Image (cartoon, rainbow, N blue to C red; front, side, top):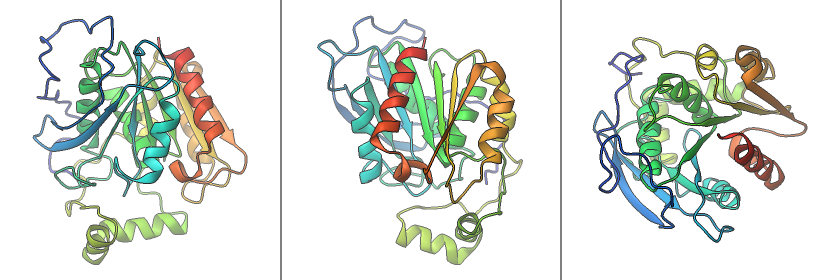
Length: 286
């Protein structure tokens, strides 16, 4: 859905605060809550929130950067609940993808959103956090996989560990009723109007050209950084062949959790699961 080359990786033009380019992050992370607009490499303003965490006497060196699902944003109750859970394990950065919430631009449903995540990770590192874990849900789950692959050698905008929850393995899947409805929403003018006025999501009208690297193609490029794939066995959007394809592509650097009774993405992620993800991140992120 972008008219620019999807494999192109551009670094964010935003540099948090007054950090010097190439400078090593501070050893003592700043315990500073903040909210601001950061700017992506292609010039889109992204609404971003930094929260320092709640359980550490000193500011944690680990930060979770949360990539929400389609039609979410940083202020949605289900995204705030995710952030509150992860705050018991480290600092948290949430943001709204382009076309969502207060952010500018229009959604490309997973293509140019890798630039939004790269800008958020760069901003997070600017607070002095030495370790970054990207955690994505549904559309955000596909974005964290592609971001980790495309920014594998970028110490500023890249990640140290990846968690992908309820993500597709391949594009254009229409095998379930929810996904057929989503394709109508994205591909039809009437659907995009529903998205804009009914779901506060502005969707780009252009098709992908070229088609972005698929999640399953991205996964092998993430190694040697650890990857956790989480999926519910009652997911109504993507059946279990999707997480199994991702886990197979990951090989030894990946881990698969198939959650009994779990549905789809943020709404289906219980407190127990979120804290297990938080524990995994603390143990595995460098």
